[in-house]
Image (cartoon, helix red, strand yellow):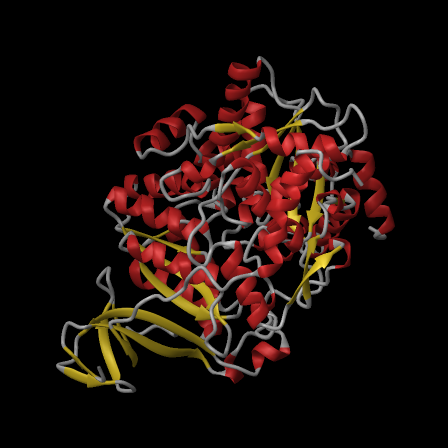
Length: 470
Length: 104
């Protein structure tokens, strides 16, 4: 029997392939309206915090150290108004086995795959998650395939992604690389169908629940060392899982008062599926090109319902420019003796700016770092940018135009996190929800769900719907 | 080396979708070019040269076909070139912390 392997035929089998490859019947959590039972999904298909700590502990994941960045704090205080300049801390997630917090997400997914008898795992990712899945698969004796979007049509690869391919292969994984385009999903589906492997998606309850240990651990560490919870936690936001998992972990620790801030690199104007623009960016994740679309429509991911729902948890969402992140990466090395990968420092650039708004006795925490190495480092990334016609300048990063230049701040006082209007993003999510559920009459339960899913109020949702003419 | 023997570690190439087969939502510049793929494996053919259509077994044991493009493929990504634009940062930061520069 030969199956139709054309693009449209494979995409048409999407739901049945996914059901086999994730082992979750998402229909169980759906009802008639736009509403679905998020907490039930997390409860029934995820793992308890204690189980996850055990699962992760068995593979050396978690319990990463917290460092107080004393010199960076001092620098912030020099630049801030008198009495301002919160203490800045960082959680060194690069200490995880695969070099990033993604080990937490991968540990639960791969554990789950093994437990349910899958022979291997597949993940579609060009980032740290691939390395994390490959590392966990190596520990559990499962086969692993990582599917990457890596090259433009000239065969030129992003140095950071090429390094990730190397790392995955080092752990014994097969790395299938593709040129630019969303049809990566087609190749991904074909592989799932061919192999019967588990889809170690970033967006299943297992993956997201795996990050809860990070938020929980962070709260516990601060209670132990400072006798209290931090005031602000900053998390880099792309697909939404980092923010979601961390915030859920904080809540599980009872640290509900902590302000959760998302930070993304501003890549405004660059199209993520564009062949010509692919190598014009110096960040492959943690940027607005993922952050905004996934916040305003989380269910665009590779599973029917994404467990990463950042709007449920975000108190504030800021952007920083590429030049600011490169500057702060250099700062972390030069002032704190910590050389870490640039992408993980997106939230550090934001925290450095936000710390200057807060009183000196406040505590702000950056909840991750990532490993650095060949390709994945400011020098190769800026060299690559130059080769692709991007001008590297020193000046005011506010003038940076993504895809044209990278502006390193000529002075650290020019590092300024920019607030995104969360209400606008909430509105956009509600609008997408209505458009994707055409013909469905929203009832009170749906409205309540939308209020929860956007951390707003029933009144806010009503007002937005009225504006939309619903 | 232009001749690969059975069992050699090689890189293969394929076109997944020709430009006219690409998804409707793809931007125009991307639609102009095919969706390409690269993978690696141990050569299953007795002998092959660069450009031949071959079959390989990937590291985890999948069999795939493709055009042979490299024998004993290796990575050459590195730490880039000197970026002189970065050199001022450390000195500037130390000078601010030492109070050598007035705050702005």
